[in-house]
Amino acid sequence: MKNREDKKKDFAELRKALEAANNVFVTGFEKMTVDQDYNLRKTVRGAGGNYKVVKNNIAEIASEGLSSNDVLKGLRGMTSLAYTSGDPVALAKALTAYAKTNPAFTFKAGLVEGRAIDIKAINDLANMPPKEEIFAKLLYLINAPAQRLVTALGAVGRNLAVVVDQGVKEEKFKA
Image 1 (cartoon, helix red, strand yellow):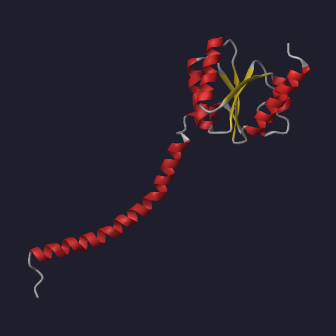
Image 2: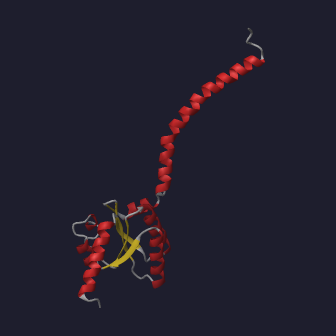
């Protein structure tokens, strides 16, 4: 059993983690083996997140006054949190892939960029392309009109040079 000081320390750590993380996935893990839990923690770390098993009432009290309070209110059953202040898509993809192979792992709710989301939205988030791919597509869309303008301007001079060259070869220009 933990003593009161250890419990206060755990509470403070959870509160600090919830304040720092703007992306939180509330999950259930009933009937998972130790090996499955180890693999889950490894998967979450690989996606740039943190994983913590929490007591429902402690999580609710620790989240008071925070944006995560909506998703941590009234929890039932065994609960854990996967959270990150980084890319929520990468963490959602990792958790969803893990949930497909381990049915004992379930989603309860989520918080992305300070907004509460449901289980369907978590799956939609997991199906999104990574942030880098979205940025690459955006840069392409921004850059494409400039490339077309340069190509069109270059084509005028090139076409004029071709016409003049053909005229010289066919001796159409006489002095």
